[in-house]
Length: 293
Length: 234
Ligand SMILES: Nc1ncnc2c1ncn2[C@@H]1O[C@H](COP(=O)(O)OP(=O)(O)OP(=O)(O)O)[C@@H](O)[C@H]1O
Ligand SMILES: [Mg+2]
Image (cartoon, rainbow over all chains, first blue to last red; front, side, top):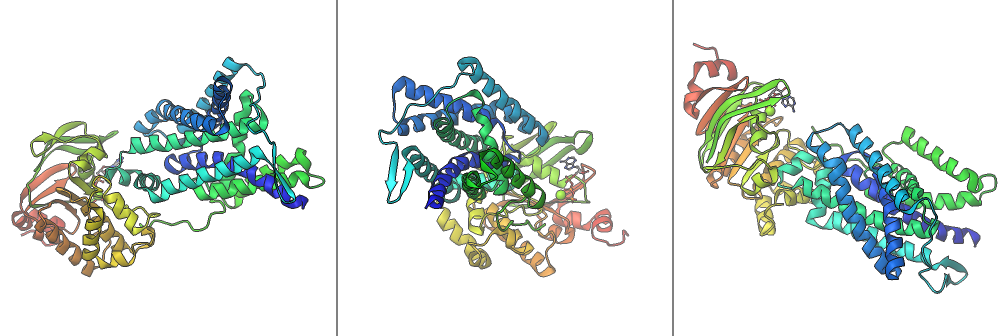
């Protein structure tokens, strides 16, 4: 009984991680680097969400929608400022990496300047704090997190796999020059992808803010999303979601294991990351199609 | 149709194209032959906007062609690249959809036309393109170029790595493409067959045009016979 309860908790944690992991996967997919500016972006979004609720007294749904939109716009700016010039000059990938980390630190410091390092907390969104399913209890916010994360991931999948624009993003990730030759406006498609990344950072930021209170280093939690995206296979969207859910479950379960507890559980998680990077860098995902030459 | 004047292309200190002049007439097959590294692919990449020239002009029907690949495609100049470059992880049908990215209206109908042209592609429409045989990938790459109904088709070594029977099929297809009213600029290593179907031809050497004329004239040139067709110059 306790175990099933923990699985429910792990699922909702994993769902939030998957919002972050998908952001990594989307950028890695098209530009082939791990975009650590996402941490800063998520922090900024968490504070934006907080300001929106505090100023307008909006509910969770409206806060999420507005923050997602703001996140999308900021991600567009980040792409413009940090990456577009690098692409025009055909810079090596290491520059993207450095640029993304710099951007992340910049965003985080902006937040520190405006909000100092005080802790803030989101207001309570729900009158009833838990929902009961037979013998199980779930925090209402956890349930909302699970439902909203999974449905937004489902929408992302539909966009990527069922629309022409989504197919163009996937084509771009496989062969950028060939995508150009199809008449795909690569700058536009990359900007569109960054908008999606920003939307997910917006959702993730609000949820992380609700879960952990607000502080300028909130964005360091993106490491969890990064681990998940490595486990899922870098650049593999579905793999990232699966990796994130597994990670959420694992963390919650490890905390309950005698001898590991909450102190050692991050250590175990990083050992798993290392093992994946060494033994199976392509992640848990199945078939990788090799292009015939 | 396409007028190229004084085109100069550099990669850092490699001079790939040296003031190349070339015209492609409407409704014709223009062949471009030359040894490895002569600059043939560079020329096509420059026309389609993947490579920026240092100097020179490219005009389509009298007006300067854009330098942005997606605008060039919208103008009806479509490039089927060397080495196929199909999207390996997309299905055959998704690859064709990408080919029609700029002209999605009427896609379903044109898709059926392509499938009539190559029933093999229809049988494999849900298969990932990376799992197709080399020949099938080449057919897919050509169909992906054709499905937007281009006005000018740039083809870079479409017969590369194909068995003799398939090579013949490709050259028949190229003639059919001309019959559809599509202007073709054809880069080929198979000089003999390319010159046999070409209305006009250019020979490129070290980034410069060294010879041009009708397909027959170039085919009859003793130096060409010696260098590209393996015949003794007499
Ligand atoms: N991206 C690039 N960077 C640097 N040099 C390049 C690049 N692309 C081509 N080159 C050089 O430019 C010259 C012309 O190359 P190009 O690919 O145009 O030749 P080609 O005629 O198509 O040859 P092939 O018949 O082997 O395909 C070569 O010396 C090549 O090494
Ligand atoms: Mg070439």
